[in-house]
Amino acid sequence: MKINGKTKVCAIIGDPVGHSLSPVMHNAAFKELGLNIVYVAFPVKTNMLEDAILGARSLGLLGLNVTMPHKHAVIQYLNETDATAKAMGVVNTILNERGKLFGYNTDGKGAMIALQENRVDPEEKKILLLGAGGAAKAIAFQAAQETDELGILNRTENKAKQLAELINKTFGTKVTGRTLSAEVLKEELETTDILVNATSVGMSPDVNASPVPADLLHSGLCVMDIVYNPLETKLLKDAKIVGAKVVSGLEMLLYQGAVAFEIWTNCPAPVDVMKKVALSKLAEQGGRH
Ligand code: ATR
Image (cartoon, rainbow, N blue to C red; front, side, top):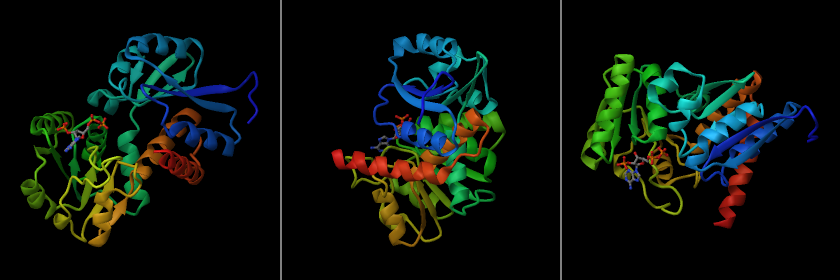
């Protein structure tokens, strides 16, 4: 690509950001559409967050992705935040429009689009979500708006209950939060259509761990994992064996990126190109571990 006096800049800020797949995905997408935009990664420590946001505004950066540990704290420095991102208190995407910073959360939308793109319609379905951290929160907020029934299970039960309460208060739904145990899983999975793992269980190097005992999975399920390293987690392997449909974590990563891309550029994201480069970057990173 040719960088010149008119090149715009997008960036990811967080700590750490070195392993992020977003730079390769977005740069490939900008190139594909012939857009004069470049995407870089800026490691930003917690005590430098305000300075980083002020700098992004004054340097006229087009957009930012925000990752751990700033997804919550960044909100106070923005001019406006999208209603859902505001209710959950988590922002992962910022658009700079002539010095005004707008915050969004594309993680939940990314997860729901990933399901739809894999021909799984969440409407009139029961989703069972495992986890109550940042990623689970974003998925839960979106899922509550798109599905009929949502259950949240978490190792620390209190966090599941708090998240369910926040969702019920925001949307007037009847989401339940329970403990993540084999007993509860057995009961819940009997009536579940879509199971989403939003815990970090199964992530490299713990590749033989799964949040769900294999014998509780059944062929009527669609199982989506947000863990993408490894691409095929133990949970997804077990799900495939029983004949369940599976959606990998790369899909959610891809579509949250696609939604951010569209916010910044107003152009449909070239998802095939983004997926291809993300897959090869993952393979390259996998080889180094
Ligand atoms: P993220 O932002 O990626 O969601 P997080 O906020 O640290 O990360 O959340 C991690 C999630 O994985 C939490 O739901 C956590 O459960 P707790 O709230 O009980 O900590 C879950 N998790 C991590 N390790 C786990 C394990 N070994 N078994 C079950 N759940 C686990």
